[in-house]
Image (spheres, one colour):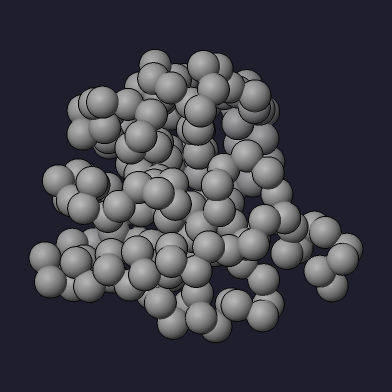
Length: 166
């Protein structure tokens, strides 16, 4: 995590009039609650925070919803699903990072698919409504496995933009 942002609210604000697509802002920063109001005002539809970046994830997620924006939480590969059980009712989406954040082109960590399956099971058992997203290492050769685990939203970076993957 970093203390500040690289693509700030001004970028969202400038792009918003030109697109009706969903703007999912992923805040990989410490103190995400400090920036959430600025991104909401700029036109973000979803604000994703990392549970590991704040000791107040529940409060931040509630504040995001109060701004009229969909709250989401992300977990890194070493974070367990059990660590976010208490905040699952507060989110519209859970993002499972399937690589260590920071560098594109990494291989998917297979154990992260177990988290996806567990989240899908918990969602069904508890009657929750959140969607499950995955980010990192998804390629054509593992896409079926990723989807079969219960993933509904896939972030694809190098699989789309790296010519070596075509």
